[in-house]
Image (cartoon, rainbow, N blue to C red; front, side, top):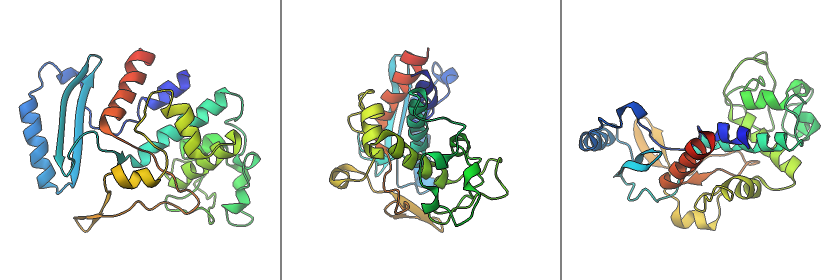
Length: 247
């Protein structure tokens, strides 16, 4: 579990202030500046929380964020959960980081014909060094001349999600729920869109030429899952992992 703990230190979707300013923090000023900046930069909403090992030091909501308990999509922070799940399976002897992805899933479904995908290892996907380009889509993937170099691509982690399903025999949602959320007591966090999401999930936004427009998330058809959580739970998650387990 140590690998899981180290990876998950970075995955809370929140704003944190440096520990060194705890004693000197002027929270009224911080609150005022945050509220002003939300208006200045036309942010639809924001929830902020600062904690230390003793608990919550500061908490505030701005814009259309009515409560820090509202659930929201954490976007690419979900990659940390995916990486943690992969490392759990590595520690359980079900995945070898240095083996090609093609030993675990049918890569021909996701790559263009005759592409050199067999050189892509699980470690390449985790490190974003597979050679897959940033905007590549499942079904037309290529391992390009960028192989071995860091190139950020969502497809890398989409493939890791498929790997988790193939090796564990569970859906991505079920695995994350059972092996990460449940052990940590994250009862208001989810790894897929379902009927409950429509009731409690705060709307997402996209920026079009400086204007924030309500918009549903755009995910590949093959991968229809995305984590969502709320600020207090994300904070609990970081406190639980960082202070109680790591230190």
